[in-house]
Length: 67
Image (tube, rainbow, N blue to C red):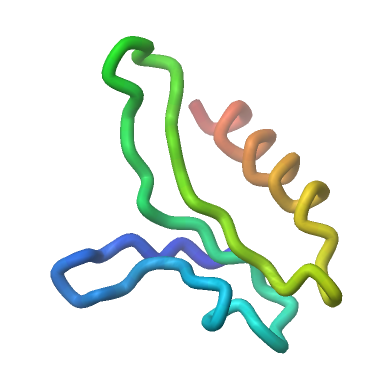
């Protein structure tokens, strides 16, 4: 998992960036306006190389574990 979330340097996850890699990119992380326990983000991966649903679950588990 690679976190890329720096708008000032145009660094955010895109499908093109994830193409032909085994990495999962997450970024554009934002707190929910109404629920302090909710985090919104954008997650991309090469669907042919990495099972995206599995990685989304890994990301969620990572944040739950480290919250």
